Amino acid sequence: MHKLSLSALAAGLRDKQFSSVELTHVFLSRIKQHQALNAFISVTESAAVEQAKAADLRLANGEAGFLTGIPLAHKDIFCTQGVKTSCGSKMLDNFVSPYDASVVERFKQAGTVMLGKLNMDEFAMGSSNETSFYGPARNPWDSERVPGGSSGGSAVAVAARLTPAATGTDTGGSIRQPAALCGVTGLKPTYGRVSRYGMIAYASSLDQGGPMAGSAEDAALLMQVMAGFDPKDSTSVDQAVPDYGATLNDSLQGLRIGLPKQFFSAALDNRMATAVHAAIGEYQKLGAEVREVDMPNLELAIPAYYVIASAECSSNLSRYDGVRFGYRCQNPADLTDLYTRSRGEAFGQEVKRRILMGTYALSAGYYDAYYLKAQQVRRLISNDFKRAFSEVDVLMGPVTPGTAFKIGEKTSDPIQMYLEDIYTIAINLAGLPALSIPAGFIAGLPVGLQVIGNYFSEAKLLNIGHRYQQATDWHLQSPKGFE
Image (cartoon, rainbow, N blue to C red):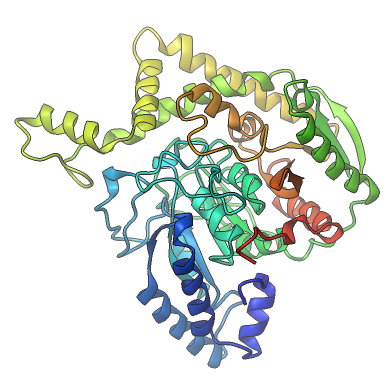
């Protein structure tokens, strides 16, 4: 059962080949069997079985939706009522949310079964899943290597089939990068397409939730539940949600694909370039046309992103002061001691680094030189994409500069770590949707292809991903030992 797609699982439940309780036990058993991957922070076994029983009742009564009874897991950044929501941090290790995030609530209403909460970089700050308070999740293709971050636990759990699907979030590539390094499909939707209510904030103008699954078809089924206007989220966009499954098989004849020449510079690993070009060649066989496009401001994305994201995180994380919720230091001498020791003892090194960078960028005398300048660069990058989409339908390129690297290999060099997101960050600055799909292997490690679309073109991206996955079988490969 663990190998089946979401559609096949749904059909099996409807046809009574197995019950939701039986299905849930299969995945709970695999989670226990593969604990060494450290994919989960919390496993909600008892609640999952109860939810599965309720789903079986809905199925028996004919009240079930398409995903009723199907297990899935949530990144630990989404608030879940009555369940620990740590965001991968010691600061929230004791935090039990009193309410559900809108995404979680929508999946509950759909009748899905929550297996637990997935490991992640602390407050979603990281490109390797090594900054988690709970230790790094391990890549199932090579357990000595990182799965990518910050949604590393989600990517590991899907790749190892510990869950049929998962939620993730993407602030600078945190769905697409781990999806690429673990060989799964991940979609970063248009900013505002999926509600951020109840999603713990890192950088509010960049954060976006999205699906991670075994295929574009499965991601489309998840998007059908996740997408849509939410009055609780002031940045949610009130725009009709299309039927993502209806256009999956549309023809790609005449599709205009743009290749940003900045993505294929000499800095890109030759083997990665070869794999990405081979994937693009498959699209040409499907009738697509390919041309080069120039996006001169893409090289400015990394510095602009780290100024803006750090500035927003320094503001968002000021709420963790040891007073209202979260970690509190022992026996504070006074209020200043309470603030400083609570934050100093509970935040990890990477979180402290970004808070300091952000506070500096926003400080008097430096705001114009750094934050304002970064926002102006953001506009230039957004204009680059606007020009590109006047010439082509989608853009394609690599997701990552290389394959999964060894745990500990880059932790002492933050700049090298930040460059892991060099091909993904510009998309977040522009607020665009982008898809990562498995597109081959280098020395036994997965490679991802990135497909970037114009605003609210998620259905087209899923169509493009699905047609490629009909022509190839990269997404069907399983890591050894997890078949």
